[in-house]
Every structure is written in C-alpha cells, then in structure tokens.
Length: 253
Image (cartoon, rainbow, N blue to C red; front, side):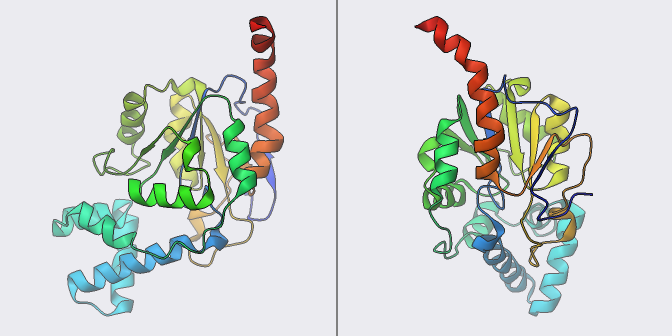
C-alpha cells in the first residue's frame, strides 16, 4: 500500500501518455489539494441537508449520511431513492459554500494549458460547483467542458454507465485518454475501458475524509500515483506527451 506523502509511483506495466489526446480530470480533491478545505464545507452542507430533511440532530444525521454513502455510493443517490429528493435542489444546497479558501494555482494552470489535446472535467458534483472551483484555481479556460452528475443522469462514478455516457457524449476514444482521479475505485472501469489512470492522493492524511478515499493502493487498474498533480504533469506527463508529438511537428514544417 502506498500512503499519503510518498511522492509518486508508476507501475512497471503502466500505460503512458505518448498517445493521449484527451485529458480527463476529476474535480474535488484532485484539481485542488485537501488543504484547500473545500470538501469539508460541502460535507457539512450535506449533513445539514439530511438534518433538515429528517428532523435529526447533527450526530444522527451524520451517521445516516455515512450509511447512505456506503450503501448507495453517494448521499444524493440515497436521498433520491429513499426520500424522492430533487437532485438539483440538493446540489444547489450542498455547493452553497465559501470558495475563498481556493487559491490561484499558476503551476497547475501552466501544466494543464500545455497538455496537447482536449481537456475535460468529469465530476460527481454539479457543473456550477466545478466551474466555480476551476475559475478560482485559474484553470477554467483550459477546459472544453464539464461532465457533471446531471449529465450522468445522476448515476455517479464508479458506475460503468457513467463513464460510457461520458465517452459517448464527448466522442472520446478511451485508449487515447487519461483520467486523473482521487479515489482508487473510480479508476477501475476507466482502466478496463483502456484509459491511462492516475491516482491523486493527499500529501498528508486528510482527517475529513474516510481512509479508503485517500488510500494509494497499488492495484492493477492504477497506472500512476502522485501526491502533487502539477509537479507530476510537468515532470512525468508533459515530457512524454510533447516528445511524442515532436516528429509530427517537424514534418509539418
């Protein structure tokens, strides 16, 4: 097992980036570090939503929220099934947070801008949340589009249908795509479909997230592990991707 703070790891059989022309990024805890403290704010709003919906105290609502999360994959999926909740209402409430803790990340922006090809965000959150976060990071303009939970018909990752719907909507050839994601289980289907997979882990253990959400396990469906996305893109991804395109660029001159 690879733990937070262990820099980066690449499996000997890892899929590389020479043929990648579509770069797909998860949002929360992937494009920003855990110390931005965005997810704890969202998580608190979800707990508050459950409290108000069921008339529970905070401790009971938190326990029910986590039960829902483990059983259904997301609290939203559970509430849609168990209580007929309007997903748009839930997402608007959950993402109504203060985003001021997110700082401009010039190194990440520079690296993403240099990636050759298309860039897309694939998130279990809402489009509005993704666009707000990406704008605060200074990277929104580098992305072609956001595929959010509404575009997935409110079926969250890691369900296979969500990835298939994403690939079809954006005409992505999976064997020419790479996915960057912070939860290991969310990379299993993409790897099976042919995508290169990169697991982004926190540099230090995040006390606001469950252990399995930040484990950097060395499993066959994970090609690369990093705890510094910007540095990984600059040092490992871009040299390979740009070198693969140099002969093509020379032929065009």
